[in-house]
Image (cartoon, rainbow, N blue to C red; front, side, top):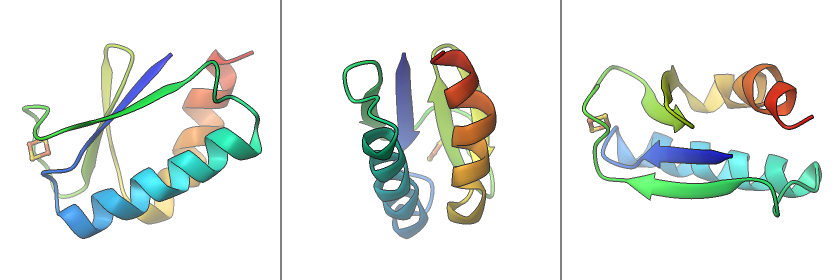
Length: 78
Ligand code: FES
């Protein structure tokens, strides 16, 4: 599974999202199943941070990153 985080969407928030995702991936021992990448723009600039999960794009923020991970990522990794 690939997760690509846009670092062009407000770099401070993007950094927090990446740090949280890295932490959650390692906490759930999914480092061999999930590739975490960065992109400079995913072409869907919004108020939050754009994140591409496989071919789908989501808009998240640092405070919704954990919910995104639990609802979208964990369900696909089983
Ligand atoms: S700058 Fe993040 S999607 Fe464009």
